[in-house]
Length: 88
Image (cartoon, rainbow, N blue to C red; front, side, top):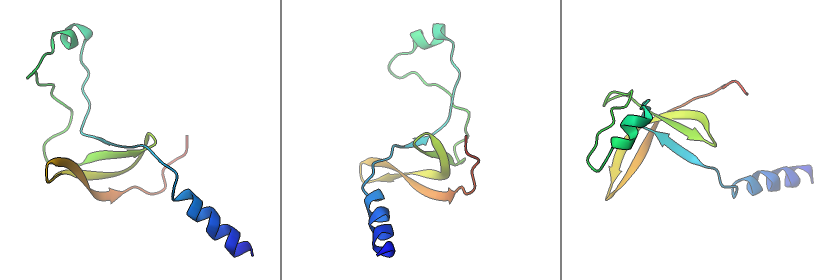
């Protein structure tokens, strides 16, 4: 009976939506420069082309990956999952 309740609890969690984000990099831009940005503007990020991107679930860093193209969409190949993160 306890095993059935535990299994049901785990299965219920499979249907919970989480927010996943892939962060290519960051940039600090003064508001003055930000207001001048227009179509075709380039903002340099703090990552190099071959560096992994950060993967977040519910705003918590959970892994790293690489950007890939899947048909006409961008995707991410997970290359590393982080373990044992400190809780805030």
